[in-house]
Amino acid sequence: MTYVVTESCIKCKYTDCVDVCPVDCFREGPNFLVIDPDECIDCTLCVAECPAEAIFAEDDVPADQVHFIALNAELSAGWPAIIERKEPPEDADDWAKVKDKLGMLER
Image (spheres, rainbow, N blue to C red):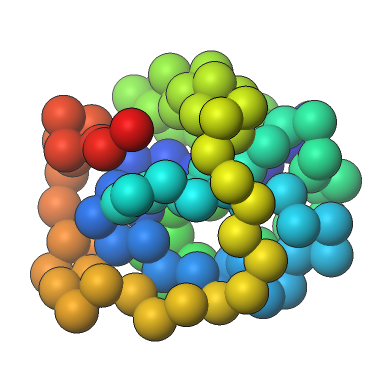
């Protein structure tokens, strides 16, 4: 099992999760983070660190977010690794609880 970043991260891109990841499995896109399923060791450390509550165990991804399992795998293959915390966008808090943001995902 791996962990999956879901829709709540879009346009928030908090990177607190990156700081605690022991294997550097996070990948960074323009306005979203993903987890490389081939690198994730299922340690759970990132889940508690995510202010947007966007990270779930693969088996616990909400039904309306299941497509993010494949999306994490797809995007992690082309996005660069992120290994240090960065400041979130200035409006990250405004976007954290917004729903239906998939159309805003920048690849």
